[in-house]
Amino acid sequence: MSQRVYIFDTTLRDGEQVPGCQLTTEEKIVVAKELERMGVDIIEAGFPISSPGDFRSVVEISKAVTEPTICALSRAVKGDIDAAGEALKWAKRGRIHTGIGSSDIHIRNKFNSTRENILEQAIAAVKHAKTYVEDVEFYAEDAGRADLVFLAQLTEAVIKAGATVVNIPDTTGYCLPDEYGRKIAYIYEHVSNVHQATISIHCHNDLGLATANTLAGVMNGARQVEVTMNGIGERAGNTSLEEVVMAIKVKKELGLHTNIDTTRLFPVSNLVSQMMRMPVQANKAIVGRNAFAHSSGIHQDGFLKHSENYEIMNPHDVGVPKSSIVLTARSGRHALKHRLELLGFRYDKPTLDGIYTRFLDMADIRKEVNDKDLMELVR
Image (tube, rainbow, N blue to C red):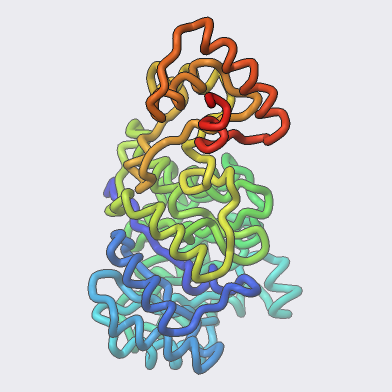
């Protein structure tokens, strides 16, 4: 089995569904070009049947980028698939992503259908999509809550019908990592033609486990991950691209790799945040403002002695210019001395002790002490 993990980015489709985060076609093209530059393998550019704007976005992104596969979403409905096929006419490499619910909850309560009818509809959708493109991905919506035997039966049927990728999504963020990992393992063990397709995973973050579930899926054989920048998406969001990519890079014992230029992660994160008007939380892994910031005296001392004491990644690897030492009332003498030396001030220990006492008084009042405050302090 290949040890490359393919990155399927759905920032412009699933991510853009977040209220207030909608982009114009021109804005989508800017993001798509940055995703291409970063090394994303597949860009899900939109849901063409949903609106004329989304149809146009898929068309224009298909024209604007050349390296990634351009993917268009559809339901397992002929009209959806026709719209996706038409929108992808200009794509150098096009993919239709079609599918239907696989859990009994969805089959009964969303489709008012039966497992048998769902199988027939899924097969028909894949076959129709194949009349437009060779590369067809099928999504078994709500696979996280689906019956395993039926899920395996559905996966085998759509691969036989021509699906090149099968997406086993935890649509509602329901699974625990070991549970989701076992689900992917079961697919590999019980689907006779599984190696004729790529197994993909798409996890939502309702329980805060999207990244953990995605990694569990990869460790059990999946080789495509469906992700968004900054983890944006429906409800609590999707799996974060930057988290999965860096977990694979840092945990070399997994023996996996991606084609992502990780030095582009932070700049692209900022671009998406600004264009979608969606701030990145300060403590967000990899790209948050505090991801490489140290304010505790114990941590600052250890970091200044040797960065690997408290950093498992080099900030340059993700495009962050440098780590930062944040001075607060929790900071120690080592951090204060370091910052003063950066400003050109060197003191013997007794003098520094006196400055440190005054520093703590200032920090208690001002919460965070910046360089201007330090200049005032030493004067």
